[in-house]
Picture 1 (tube, rainbow, N blue to C red):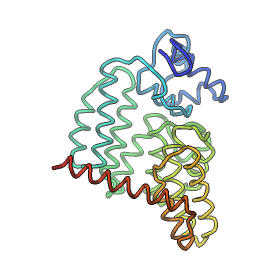
Picture 2: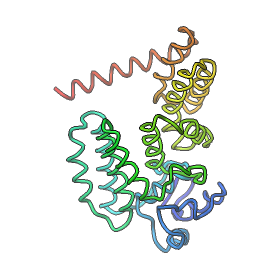
Picture 3: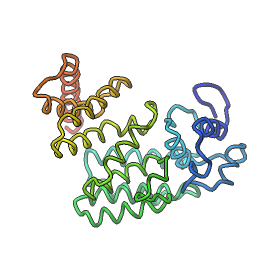
Length: 282
């Protein structure tokens, strides 16, 4: 196995070195993913983690598994490919997701099954999001699979991608009672953390809205400003448009020239994307 810094480095050694650098306990890193003895076998190259478990471990350490070159079985590759297909399909035609989930659930693997099931329950919750009771039930069942206690997050300093989304989804259904805690958790992640890159823009937008509804426009603008600065720093457009549109609203159309240019550019990109999708649908 390799990564960008060298050749034939064992993945267990890379994970262990990063764990030690971040001063995370083995128990904390492995919670709900694998036991400590299994992790030790990863570390000493006695066994290789399955792709789903490896991805979750990388999430908790804050780096992107795509930055590594890893070997996996054909079945693991097909499972990850099917998961990607489900996520993409959910964005354009949610009516087809149930059938894909059935196919995904039949792709049994010896390791990483809890993470497979967690993904299935998360998707089922999203599909039933308009029925808050049913959605909440699915989401809560999903949290159990990796021993995630959303009522005691302060004792869990590391989450993987599905866990963080479950926390956000459940809190949204509960009226965002833990929104400040969610925002602080994501904000305090390292700027290069893969989960911060994925979620900070969206959660900043939601948090700013909540603060504004509490008649605190200045604080809402400060939240948006931090999100804009971060997006600039990592050169990311995801959710940049809704952040800028909201700032535009709160500031009385007072955007800088560069912010206006970014917003216009994103609008042009979205228009082109829509035209491409229309052509593909013909």
